[in-house]
Length: 142
Image 1: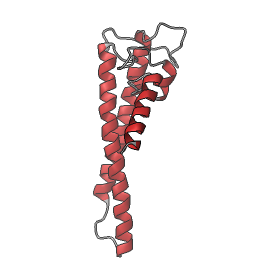
Image 2: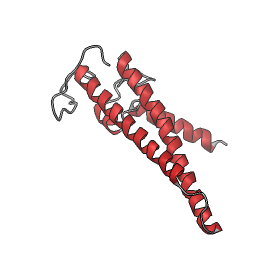
Image 3: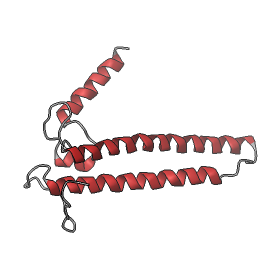
Image 4: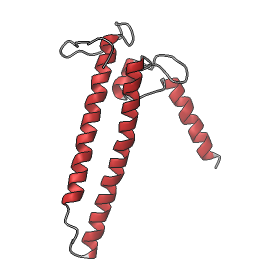
């Protein structure tokens, strides 16, 4: 929980006119992250229940192969969710310690629009582009 209980007005949206990462904005993103986290947990639970409920003795080999492919896809999605949950938890920690919304590399503001689109962002756009370019160069040099 943030230091002081912050009550958001109904339909509140962060605005560029406000002080960046003021208590309302922090609470807005905290709630956004918590809601996203809850959705991922519920979807993961559905995946687990689907896999558990599936009958193992499926007809012919083609059907079995089809089911194994579907299960593999579900498990990959679940693994992606697990990684996302870790990033959401890290973002929630940054909300708590006051570093949320600021670039890990430069300390600059990440920006409301970027955080709205990707609430787990840790880099400002310039730093993200530099990181992606570096990744591409490393991949190309192999």
